[in-house]
Amino acid sequence: MAMLTGGQLVAKQLKKEGVECVFALSGGHIMNIIYGCREEGIQVYMVRHEDTAGFAADAYARVSGKPGVIITTAGPGVTNATTAMGEAKDACTPLIHIGGGAMMATYDSGTCQDLNTLDCMAAVCKDAKRCLSTQRLPDYVSKAFRTAVSGTPGPVYLEIPMNVSAASVEEDSVRIPEKSRTFCDVYGDPQYIKKAAQLLAQAKRPVMIVGEAARYSTNHGEFVGMLAEYLKMPVYTTSMPYVRGLFADEETAELFHLGEAAAAEADVILELGVYNHNHLNRGQAPNLNGEAQVIQVHEDRAMIGFNRDADVGIVASCGVGAMQLYEAVEQLVSPRNDEMWVQRARELTAVAMKPFTDSRTDEITPPLHIGRLTWELHKWLDVNGRDWHIICDGGDAAQWMQYNNVAHYPGQMLRFGINGTIGMGPGFALGAWAADKKPVMYVTGDGSFGFHAMEFETLLRYEIPTICVIANDSAWGMIKLSQELKFPEYLAQHGHHPINLLPDMFPYEKMVAVWGGIGKTLHKAEEIRPALDEIKASGTIGILNVEVNQHTPSPRTIGFAGVVKQ
Image 1 (tube, rainbow, N blue to C red):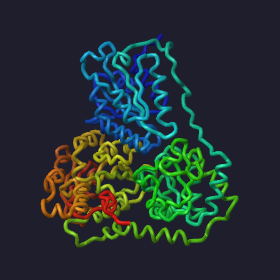
Image 2: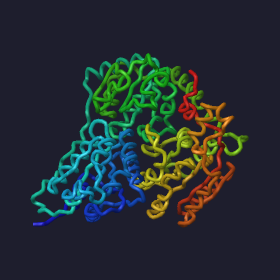
Image 3: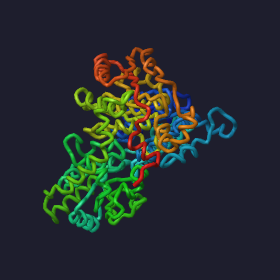
Image 4: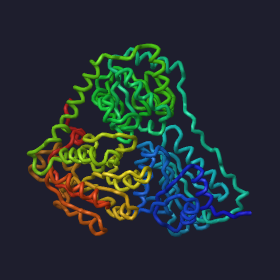
């Protein structure tokens, strides 16, 4: 009878769960699992820091709609991924983190890499377990997947001591789960669907909000756009950019541009898979009209009523809920043809977007306005890279890039979540590419670039077509700019604290040239598109280090500073 190691059992179960690739960094405690992955034909992407592996697994899930997998060695290998797990948890990303552990016989004896990583991961993951039996490894792996995708999705940690993954057992002694997960949808209670449909049919100013969990609840998703169009209902998707393009191409679906600003005046708000967190002001005014009646649709009952009361709470999958509501609304009211609310939403959106739209043609601000930079990137992508992934990294830079671009498909545009996890860009670039093999435009600030700059070797090693654009303001821009807004008198007298400043136009672009990529320093708008053309034509990766103005905060940074008056 065949003998299998614990590592082989883990890999076999990963294969049964549909895993095509994992992200890891070499380590002795996990090599049996890595060898098992090779035997099963699972691609192992090796990075230079475990946090990058976590970010890559996160991005893979956001793009593919399937759980991502990270494997880390014991002790510091696990703890190095702590930030990535926290990002995934608050972004509602289904992710499986398999961590190595010290041998059980030497626990608490001062052995190498014996840290209490189980408790550490429990603090930043949806669930954390340790498997102490080689025979039970497939059960633990399958349970990790079920937990990660159930209710509100999130990261799950599974720790496997080295002796458990290295031990061999007879294959016949192991139960290998074959049908351990259901993919069925959750249908809403008809009486609640009816109540919600009545609210929508009577609404004069309805708005739909699409949240994080909707990414993993897309069956019958065509009804989301159909419902929005039927009721002329503006849609808000910008809170988490990876759901932009999920149910409609933003270029052709105008309603999907109008919901963010319109939500402040909505009389009925329909939430699909929404986590009412800080980006939505916890579902409160002024972001969302405090007087509006709220319909919340979510597979996780615990998320209904979170931070914002639900007038109607429907436990259902997002696409299915939209389908049920569409069919019910269709029985109550004819398609709306009145453009009054849509026109008002256009006006509100124009006001909210004015700082972004004004910056797009800025000709006088020296150095280059970052809004002009990101608009030039948009124009280039529109011609040369409509299917490229757009990674929005950096505090202030991410906001300009996000609002000056459009998404054509789900997961095209990625950005950190409510934790403000800057520096995730290289990992997101790797994970996005691994999911669909589409090229990457990675936009970051000079501060964020420094977190994981060595990962450019990773991108080159896997020949991932990547153009990195650094919006270089020689500072930790979002903090520096917010300090200027909050304490102008103090700064006029004392100047900025050096902690908020970085070297003046440091030549970051030279890093990629060391490995055969193309690096350029740019100062003018007219230099941008020719430089992008050159990098794309070269077939390698590149870094454009672009000098940008040091005193032009995005509206989001102004809000972050807390100086906006109502």
